[in-house]
Image (cartoon, rainbow, N blue to C red; front, side, top):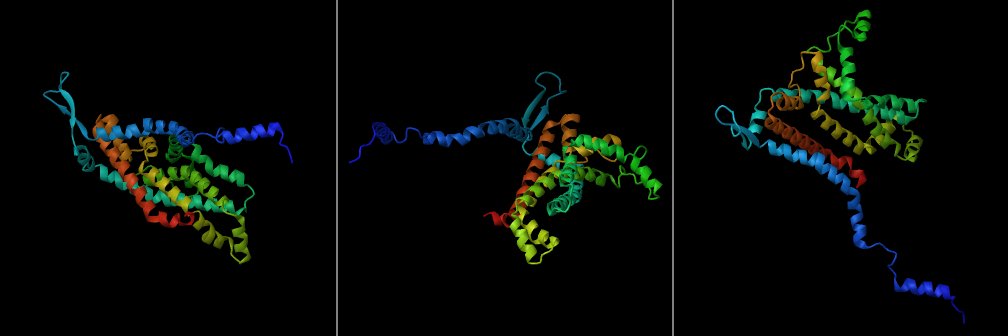
Length: 324
């Protein structure tokens, strides 16, 4: 007959008597994720949610003026309903600004994502010896603020001081007026492409690095070339990342503001309502009509959500099928 040491017997009795003494309570564990999310939720509600609600509220209001508008009670804020929305949509300058944004997006989004995908595939192929330098060089323009980049490109566009014009004239090609009415859309689009390609390239390149190398080796054993591997293996696998970058680019296109606003003093071809957001700025801070500006902002937000959600519904099932 074996005897159990007293210390081991006491430890065993305590563990049996209080089996859950060292375990956290279930309620405490359930509330831990919300405690970590609380700061983000508070900041989102205070600096994003509340302004959106306030803008929607202002879009339904207007100022009513009595008499000559003098005195303390001469101006009062009243309910306007959809009057501000009707006034924004029927504005003669609203639809042309939407058309310019559409043409701008048709240039920027395909070219920017095409270049980002091309650079990502070339870097992932491993044929360059300066991969780290190339990644940094391509990504670096994204780190330049949009206003600074617009100023830099704006001076390069000016015919009298641009060194590009001297080079073109010296080569006999002539120098187009990039700030003229025929080229201004491409000039603004070039700034966005130059600044956004690096960010999208990093996203796609990171997705490519997550693909197992065994798939490439098996394809090479089957006789597939690098182009076939890129087209049949790499691009289909990173389709979710392509969808994400497209949605981000679409949102940025609908909200373009800094580039044309910065170039406006350098050219008389950019009006105060060249984009919808520039119209919002003019109504709110030049005309002091915050109610019409709020209505236009809500329209832009709804259009952005509708286009993004519609695109995700259209291609999301195919792109994210491999992750189910």
